[in-house]
Amino acid sequence: MGSIRARLGWALAGALALALVAVLARGLEAGSLDPPPGPVGSTMKTLGDLVPAWHRQLPSSGCGSERWDCIMNDEAVLDHETGLVWQKDPSWAGVDTWPNAALVCSSTGTGGRYGWRLPTVQELLTLKDSTTLDIVSGHPFASAPGHTYWSSTPDDNDETRARHITFSFGASNEQSAPKGAAAAGYWCVRGGSAQNAQSQGALPAWARVLDATGGCNSERFLCIWNSSAVLDRTTGLVWTRDANALGLGGTFAPAETYCASLALAPLGVTGWRVPHADELSSLLDRSVVAPALSLPSGHPFLNVSGASSYWSSTPSYPGGSAGVVFLGISSGQPGWAMPLVLGTDLALNWCVRGP
Image (cartoon, rainbow, N blue to C red; front, side, top):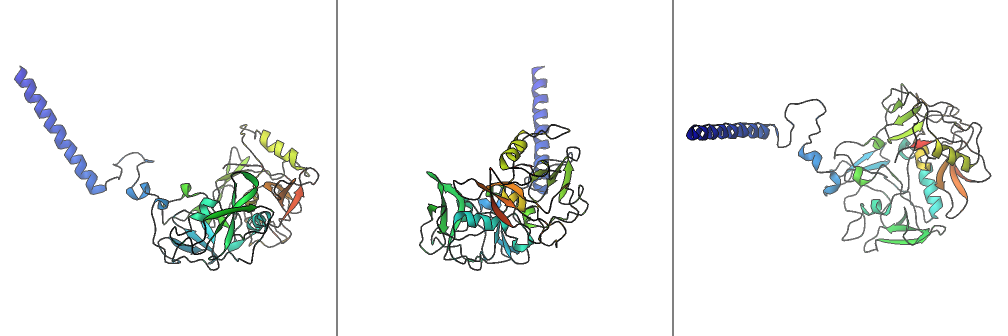
């Protein structure tokens, strides 16, 4: 009896081994990480998906190389290593203060797109060659080398100072200066962080122009939460569909309080805030001619005012009591920004949700 059980055990083990070999063979034929036939929505990834571009060093030989693509009418450069989009020509014309640099970036419509901002120190350093401390060789940028640029990163020990990076042979990596000093130029960027980079070869949403025709069900916009909010797929931000929640406008404090305490009906969704300047500008469409609203044609938003200002949470002056607002959405100057005093000036409020 024992020998019969032993023979059955050996037979079963052999059958399992043969089955395992067959499965492995089929797996090798399909690709080492390809999923077997299964339900739609499998989370299996290919080997290429598991190695993000920012983990590798891509060959750099100008526009159309493995690392760089020139996009947006040749006015911007997509870096496949980080997924960031940079101005191709920073138009360096001297030094400026940090508030002015931040204001220029959040107001610019380079490449027909808004939503630009000052880069962080870490983002600027991704463009540096660690041996020469200049811009990596083979880059496609026009006037960037040899200059110093502000970052959005404050000094660790002093919030009134910000760090800046110099791109020049042998130059030190980074220094800091008072935000009110004319110490550096500006090189604007769009997109998320390197940790959010998409696989090399796939243009991230902020590098493309998504069609807004159709409003709530367009390529760009999706109305959610019973159409009380709008998801913008180019940025991943969620906006209240009503762009004039506080009526005729008020000072900054009520706007901030309103967004922070908003429980958007009908689902009671919380977590809202006053948007940053570059987030507000990401909604603007430079190609739309006044007197039409400078928003993408077909957008789904309600009660947008083109004759008033909208609050942002971006500080205009370090340590000061002012904020940056976007003015005249239909004035022929979309994205024009100016400082307003938080406690006295009036502006409209448009709440946002997301990173």
